[in-house]
Length: 174
Image (cartoon, rainbow, N blue to C red):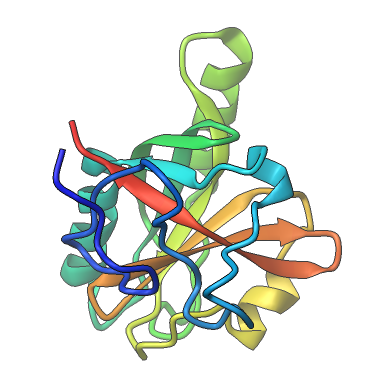
């Protein structure tokens, strides 16, 4: 596994989930502290390399529209990213995951034939790397993970009771 890249340098070439060298939101107040996240038991959220690549590719292909999709796995690991149709009335400024895809994923998780729905991803073609005002207004405050793809990189957020909380993450190769 390649050595981790420097903290705060999120990008498609960052791999490695060992030690304290993790990605953190570029808008986190103190990147150097990289405090453990209570939702992942002090560990960075882990994203499989295929899921990471799928999100980046979906954003590139959808531009100038917002890409969107589902994140499947466990509370601390995103195994699969599933791009879905963006059915928002104005997909240049907003996203809405196709309800049929969302219902099918929840049904598969419930009956044991598929992984859990961990959260959602979407792109910001305007290059904003943090949740927008529209994101904040539409958030359910349900603890799910939101991944935002912008500038060929990702940032991760927990949709918490008090709003979005930045999450550190690592991309696991293989």
